[in-house]
Image (cartoon, rainbow, N blue to C red; front, side):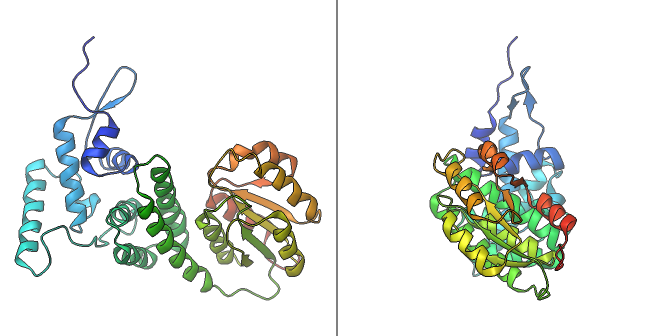
Length: 320
């Protein structure tokens, strides 16, 4: 059987400047393109598919919402982009695409993720800040954190690890999101009688956004949170627990998933802590240490929704 000619999704990503994640979302949710599938279910995209995705990408950069333009015929997309390009030439703004503008539907976080990734790849911190600020107005706090920021940072991390995102891009995204989430967390005021929980990453784990997002989720749920930053040895975590009369310790484990030193570090932390101090562990690399998590009796909470559900089940009051 002769296969139809086409391009694999990684080639499409390279030619269009879109991430694999965004291409799949636009294909699945908006039917922006319909690739041919081989007998082994492998996607193959035509030259027309690539051209269409390029035009959609350019239109998004000019501020349009994917939800509003995904089904436009390719000639109308081309006219739309050309109109925006001509308008840019006639203004005092350079003819390159303008800063992404948050025109997303309030019910569609995927639009925000797509536009945020454009800002990240353009190293446009101001645009990323503007998009997050608009999202915080249009979306609920839970939706903002769990459906925009968490998957956005997963995508940034995955692209950084596979080499499709530059280190500078990843650093910019992390810096902007760290500042934004820190401001969200500081806005919460909880009762003095609320239960205490510490958030950090264990030694060797330097990616801190997951821990900071988790701390913000807990603060929103009424917990008194202490965020200690990343890369903390077991003895230091245990010392903070003693000083703060803490009821639980939450650890974020993001990368790597195979650090030979981390397992013994987790065992040591459990030995340092009192039996009534709960250990909560999340992050995309946490499952790589499942043997140790089971041994120390840690609660494995793969995502922020799981953390929110768990914290709600045990409460945040003084008797929790």
